Length: 176
Image (cartoon, rainbow, N blue to C red; front, side, top):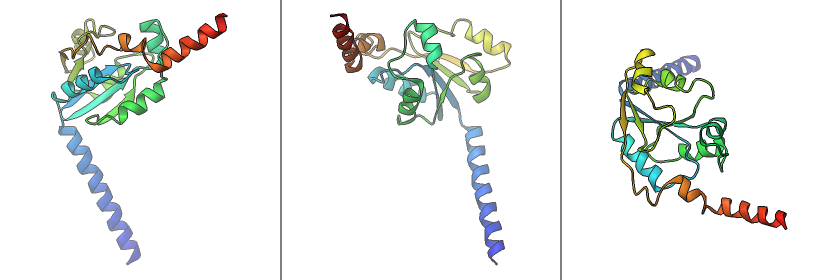
């Protein structure tokens, strides 16, 4: 009797897993990319806009190495901290770290039906339609609208962030 109940429980769990996996397979997956160094209302609006294009939102958080190469600066928060924060955002179904080598490999892995780009997102987006086609991927590429970009832009907010101000204060003390 005990063995039968264990077997039945195992079959029930497998059935739940299969149901969940088949449900995801039919969901419209949306993918976005970003550094998300200082999570602000502009990012929240970006994610909310992206979510409207599908049922399952995948957020790719840029690796530290990529941020340094593309933005010519170190991120304020490391990739694990940024990833952990993005994972907690309501509406994000999956947050993953990007790849340091082939940036498009993450698209091949998750096969989104829609890729949403920020209004000012330029890195790795040039010829994206052509690159996707060449790799046999069919994803609609959408450029999202800005949200109060005069107020909520990471580059503007970073200079006034407490962590940055604290670092500037330490640097001044060392110069004396």
